[in-house]
Image 1 (cartoon, helix red, strand yellow):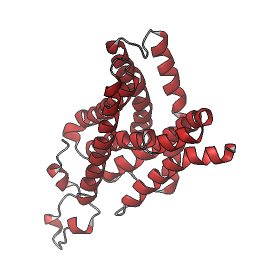
Image 2 (cartoon, one colour; image 1 turned 90 degrees about the horizontal axis):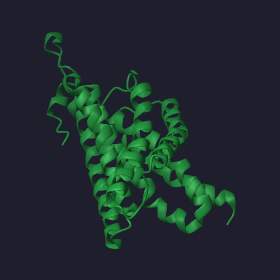
Image 3 (cartoon, helix red, strand yellow; image 1 turned 180 degrees about the vertical axis):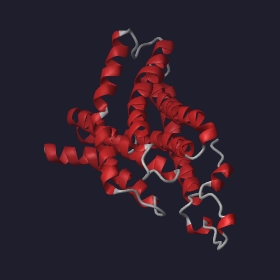
Length: 251
């Protein structure tokens, strides 16, 4: 099959998911320029992720019949390395910006970064694996990366507007994405019990279902959602635009 067709099959799933999440952000859409920057950073972030994973491999961690070593490799090397590089740009570049003006933005920007990462990763796999692998990853690895990003972005979005719990929520964002990513990879990597590989799909489906719920929650609680608008002519009684965030349940 032609290289251009394979490239298209590798990149299209990530672009479709990115567009879907952008479309779901209906109350206050993000600037296209920042979305593109996030996607491109996701592409570039594959480089430090590969470096960190290589270091982990050189330290002796990898896929083996030792389940503990495989566990450390899946969670501490692969998942943590990949989620950390995504988190760094989300926190260092996008998080402080004024355009990050509601919790839903955390999800949108996190997914854009993750889909840039997934796009290049998919190209690297698909170029060597062909059309069958492209189809498989379109329904597994790419949506999985999106789900990891939704969890991260959900908590980072909360952190921006909850200064009392900011550090805790930021850490929860990184760790929750790492935990789900690690579980997804571990059941694929482990070599001991073949049937355990089926749990990968449990993690995938469960995280995707939960992602839809997290997106819906941030949409419904958006300060830009017309149903949350508070009309008043008395400036002394104006409510803080983000007062309703105290009702969020990050669990």
